[in-house]
Length: 550
Image 1: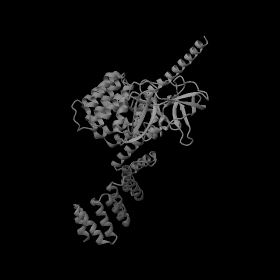
Image 2 (image 1 turned 90 degrees about the horizontal axis):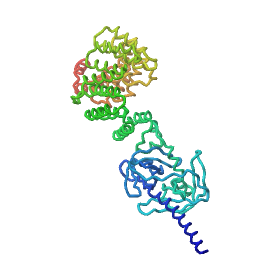
Image 3 (image 1 turned 30 degrees about the vertical axis):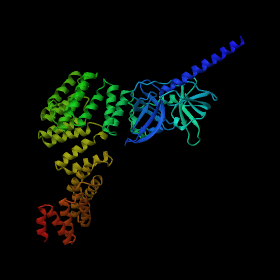
Image 4 (image 1 turned 60 degrees about the vertical axis):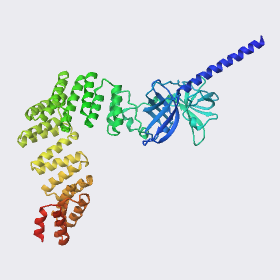
């Protein structure tokens, strides 16, 4: 009887050990190897990780991703999967969450703390039989209220860094990490990776900029759209296309994804694909008016910017039809505005003018409407005072801080009408609104106005400013050198001409100005040589000057 009881007791212990071992061994089906690559395709780093979701969600250490352009994982069955997107990472805790496009076997995360002295299991990566080794918890701490940090005693190799450490139930406590400084092995709670969420501004996070593997789109549509907008100017065309396609898949009833993809194709002059994308949008999106409006807008933009790209199905008449459809579904002034712009483009300036002015009486009222009405009047050869009145309204239609484009437009109109003193007031106001950060062509234009007002020093300053902003435009050097010669700064005129000739050695105006400056500075031989160079370049004015000073 005693022998029977002992046998039964040992059998129970054995069954318990086997059950415990089976739970731990199941985790091996979730472990994978990770390999990252540089942009040139060469090997960067390797590591381990564990799947935490059924749709390819995975956690690994972050270090292998630093500098990576792409990455793959090989699961326990030997199947290879490309890392698709990254959800987030922590450099402090060396943890990363990402996704592959595959159905995967996850392991559960431990939700309670293992005590110091408790046994833990390191589950190694293997495509065959499960490989595990025993560890002992030597330190257990809580961080950020809910998460656990552990240190371990045990024999293991650095090759297993990133492999999951589990408790006896087969619940993942964390991924094995190794300190190069202390030599200690530790793990950070794998649940911490669940806090990694992307937002629209994630594209600007320094840690995620350390890899060119793209980020997962946020779950909220407005945040996903913000990410899409920010990525448009920061990433490669192929990567941006993937973002857009992800957006459409995630938000199939939102028009923004289809419009972004259509704009992408239009940028490649592939109008057929742009049209096909918008036709899909018309059938899929909830707000049909937005789909018709954006189709009209794309057609209009194509006709304005890509008139030489042939696609007979798209024309301004169709754009007008689509804009009208949008308005019939939802009578927004915005849709009438696009209609007015299309009518203007077709050349019916009187009708466009009436429509722009009607819109100024709606909640859309802004400076752009008055400015566009002024353009209509200009095309209709209206008196300048009528045009100026509309430009005045354009300037005052919104907050002064937003009026800069219309202040410049009014200044340009006054300049063209030879009302230089009024023009310079607007030019100076525009420069102030932009806090001295206007474009090179603005400073060049203001200098021309200042010359008319005999404000020569101000003009020289503006020519110099234009040159600093654009050192490759020879006209700026020529105008500055000519003015320097006019105010008897002969040596400066020669220096400016020489600077211009460095960027445009065949620009004859610079040789003419240089020649005249040298002759007037009693350096006739050098001056005649410069004039002869202008003659060699085919400038007919050089002949007359050579005869005059010979």
